[in-house]
Length: 333
Image (tube, rainbow, N blue to C red):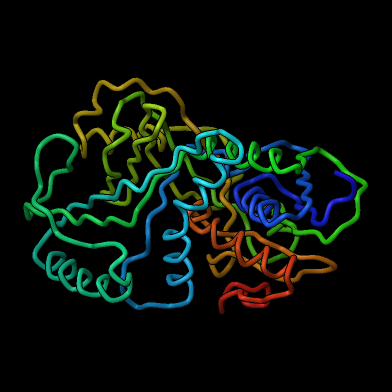
């Protein structure tokens, strides 16, 4: 590659996704990160790509819906280009229904999903069963067919392979000059004064469930992955940059086993802690900034938002077309 058409500072999910989208449109891309691929929150282990509830519709929920709908093509394209499996599958999600009020709400949301999701996915009630199903006091579970899972580290490796296959490069430092997108996570938000990092802890168990749906129970994500592990997460801990795991991680394990006893004897293969970038608005922060551009934020929903973030940022930087939704700009924070 001679001189790049675009430089992306940051090799997390937003940075690599934008680089891949630009590369597959024919642009020469250079990704720069002195800490390497997935050094921040993107190098975690959970990988839940779940939609917001289908009600009180807004620009953020609509953007996320489009991103989840194009995700299969996005990740298949990266895999085809680079040959690396990102661990993506749209396997759905199950949530127990706690009481009659929640049951009525679930029925109402099923109707909303039919309209808002345009018949492309379902939010429906299914009877609870034994096995890979959490206990449900009402005997009913919510199943949505829009939720997907992705293995974060496999996904980043797949993007990196695809970028390189298209002639792009990923380096620690550069003196090159080109239109630049800053996708630098927590450090970037703090520099901009519009956000910070929120600590999360998670763990991974050795348990083969790769074809089964995710479970969401009592605020806990239980995500089967393509490598024969199940990820459990995560905590939300403010006002700390201490990236050690502790009793709160133990509590995640205990809650997961209580919800799914089949996990009781599964080996713990990893405990993880990291800082997730959270802008004041909680939405991604996209658009012009200083002498370049920014793509940051996406607290807890970065992997789900990444395909559409990549699309609108490539549109903006490569084609001058601004399709950034309301609430996603720097000035909205």
